[in-house]
Image (cartoon, rainbow, N blue to C red; front, side, top):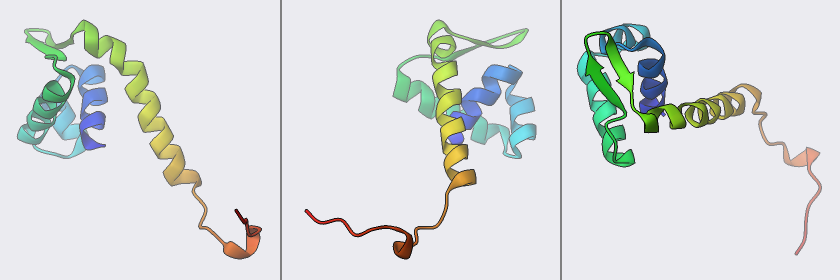
Length: 93
């Protein structure tokens, strides 16, 4: 999940330094997350330019999907209720 958070942050902030400060991790942690993502998706994802980290076409197409994944995970954490077997009817096969 941290790698996906790094992906979104780099896309939004265009700076490894800013991302490391925002996520309270080292720059090397951000770089390592990007390396793992690049390997997994077989794409550079971001190109380092004078203006900052520029997303590749693949990163741009992935962005919305990754945001939805992280939002879904956040909803699971925020709205999850503990299972209470007294509240559920028994099911038989």
